[in-house]
Image (cartoon, rainbow, N blue to C red; front, side, top):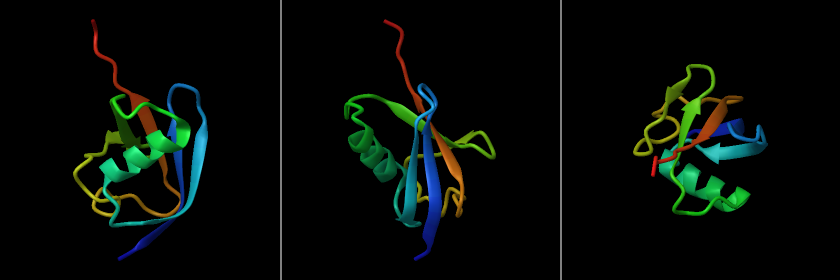
Length: 85
């Protein structure tokens, strides 16, 4: 079990950064997204995606942070998903 340190989650819409001093590398991306929504007040039903800033690749919610290649001092970008209506 690896600990990831100094992770930053940045909201693409407003630029707000949420620092995460330490997180378990085995945490699933989906669990991180759920915790982020609760932390910043995004409704649970709002679809969001997350990508690694350094690679600009979207991360699968089904894998762990460690398996997604997230490392110490990384920045993750959260984007809102919208559906045309």
